[in-house]
Image (cartoon, rainbow, N blue to C red):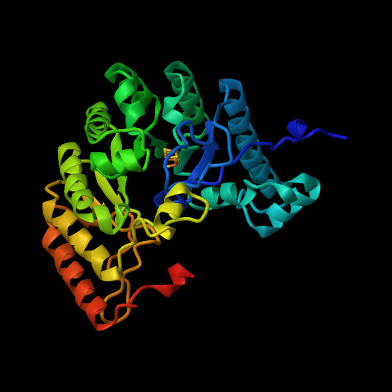
Length: 357
Ligand code: SF4
């Protein structure tokens, strides 16, 4: 009987990727496992999981397995008379010949990637640029050589990691094929960053972000509306905008706070020590943040948590991955926020229940 490792198409797939990478059907390639920090009080993503690096050999073996799967599909398509087209008949035949594919967690992900043209890849998990630079560069080059159709390769990265590595290292990593970094900024307010145990200060967010920009990465910064609750909303909004002004990243993405059961912050909010913002309060916080924002960035509401509705009951903001261009569309976004606040006054329960459920 074959062991799992001898399975020709064996490769690991993690769970998480940013919404924009899901939307572009990125190939998920696991460079590290889980999160090396794992202390943020609002985050339950990798809570029960231990961080580990993966060796260059392991990652290359995964890339080879994905490549073998793609090449075998094409060869089978030709054999069956479909001239390379990957359709249901081809996929079913390959599964018939290799039944272990039935239980493969990455099968649909790779098929979606192929159907989308094989253009983008995302390096899992939480902070893969923290790998030893030499190994990261080696494996990135291998990924790019194996899949020349790739036009964009992205990864999550911590600001602390961005600040720690030298500019030369980042330039090498960028030249090896990593294009875009998704950074969990969450807040620019030092008191709140400390409280949520982000392990980074506003200053370090700025240093890391600027370094990434100077090295030539596309930089995507995620902030978390509502994270300070009623206690800290004002400082959160103001200082987040100030830190983002200093970084001036390509993308600013809103991922609103929802206390998740099982996380330490959930206890704080359920004990009554703080409380979550109402829909109207959330929009007032957002208004202050946007008013203070002076950037040349795309401001995006592409996470399902951006659920505010307008008077007609439609989503207030587009959830497009390219969002609103600032400063050109700043006035438009502020007008939308005012409309959302008015809608909340008419009906305070005016939120998207599809998301809440
Ligand atoms: S760094 Fe990111 S993945 Fe890690 S605990 Fe914090 S929010 Fe979660």
